Image 1: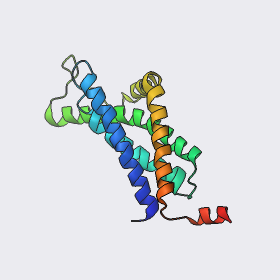
Image 2: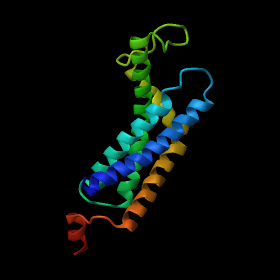
Image 3: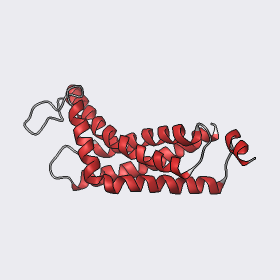
Image 4: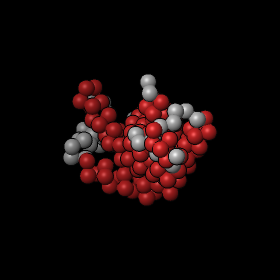
Length: 166
């Protein structure tokens, strides 16, 4: 496994833990039923988004800068809000199709993932407005700390970094 891929996956694992903790918090503090998919959806979405944005913005071209790391953290959080909600809706829908469980509060089928897409966009926007003031700075801060330790530990130096230092 190459170092850039390994570092991207390590950042994804960090995002996985943070997304899982937020999902567990929502699951444990939510009023009502039906929040059981949030920890799984949150951690999985955070892992994929975190690894993708870290690889795209930092590791792909070897530009390990703090503004890029902060941008990767903010993009990870923003996309994770949407992907978590959409993954949960898909999970509930699949649960309903395959088991007949996971019904909505009125006993009917849960939201269809296709027709529910605009609703997820609205809910993700409201989620970012409601808790984005906490999660966006935390995501940016975690990515900055990760980059700090990534640089401090060393690792492979890319061709771009060697060219920039000369």
